[in-house]
Length: 437
Image 1 (cartoon, rainbow, N blue to C red):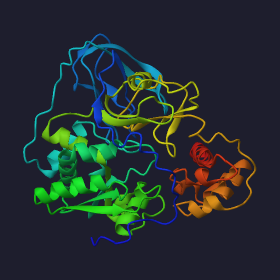
Image 2: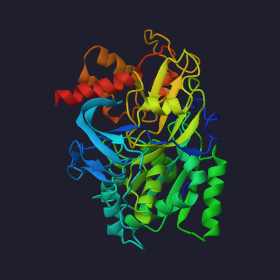
Image 3: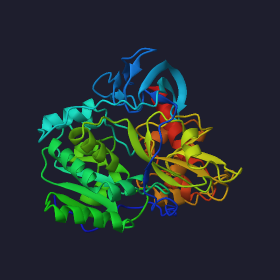
Image 4: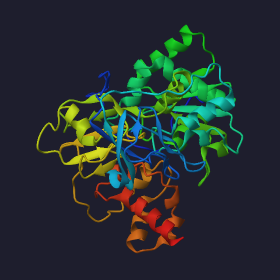
């Protein structure tokens, strides 16, 4: 593949990055909580099936729930201790799912997987599957499935854009775990039988670009290409990243493999290295805690199943009584949660606390037909027409205007002078279309 010199995509927006509070904060390991509540639905696909019972003693790194089918993922205990309950609860922003609650005994007895030396392509894929690795920058698609595409793939892109405002966990990984990250990316490359891997990093992270380039130069690595991306949102969206790096367009309803590409996240590459080289399954991750509403912004290494309240407490708690939003994820694509009783998962990249200064609390008014939403939509849609059609319960017209192609990036809502909840409109329309089928 010939790398294009114009590393960007059409349309998009330029929100304030708001990363200064945490981007220079080294990763801290947060102490494990007294209890963890581990979801069995931390990924796209079928929830994992529990293989432990109430009263069982488990160790950190022990398999506690097995993937149920090809598109599913194994789940591991993040602490050692006793299984207290296995029940359905609302402990993730996505709604109710079965959770295994484990009381931490404070001993941190751990088990690991056998270390693989010079693994084959198939051994890497199998280890990724066994370790429960998923896409850690988005919805949690099982990584082993991505590495077994039906279409011929010639390009692997590591998504290191981290374009979502406030979030800095991938940035810190690239700086502090440079070797593990790069070598993890090369393992993913080997799993796809490719001879190059492209790492797309926005140019507003020059220290990360320099760190990666310095490492590959020092080790005389020639199969890693750093692609400097123009800072713009949503540069890290899969289809936009593919276009920026390759100028290939993923067809409507298609997957990246349809244009010969696979995209994986920075943390997924790191977790791949840890699983293959260190024998560590996925049961903890780096996340950012930030926003005007938290006393001390941090980048933390947190065990899965840690309650949000515990994470916030470790960061000093609320900076004021005027916190109006707690968001799991970033301000553009994150999910607002009611309280801190949710628990972290493999895909929890950020907890964001906003005060009125950082949150858009304006009441929506009637659409003024300015078409700003259409002018910034990276999928070339016309959100104002979809919004109007849904208001009239006309699902066929929402389909006509391409609602199923919406990537829910939030550009339309960000730019709308009438404060229309356009992303919620898109999500609701897609939900109703799915229910109609």
